[in-house]
Image (cartoon, rainbow, N blue to C red):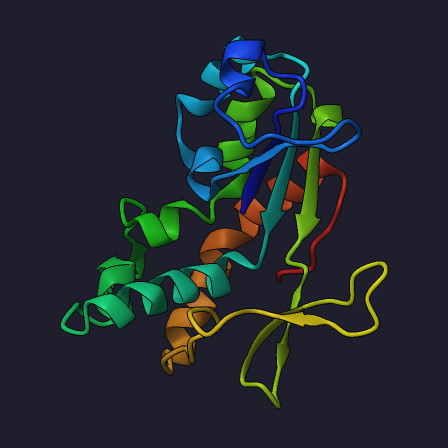
Length: 192
């Protein structure tokens, strides 16, 4: 997930956003902004003071989740394992597949850091946990709430069983990118 605080955007752009009361903050939430190469320059051109929020999760789990979402809409797509590799025998990961590409967070963050200082970017770990009773993710207990908030029925699909060897190969693939991301953000998300 990627959110932008548009409170400080120029008036013509702000007029396109929903009306808010004094003291409220207007947010735009579009996950694809984080991975769209042109987005940082465009947003910087609108307002250099924009605050950014990036929510990340283990890139392996994220890739499987992305695949699961697509599978729910297109049940005849190839297996996760076949899409993951250019060549499974050699173990060469297909980095052109968007489900893999999105999880290379360090690459995407580098692009944003060309336009925004790290101090304007809040990066948070996935604020969800898997609720075994409900069978899908729930938002960890938020301030002012007595209970966690669980996602709607369109979220939290059961992931297919993925070959452990494929998961391990993906962990190895992402490890150097994760280490760089940890260094860039000053936070170890513990995805290894």
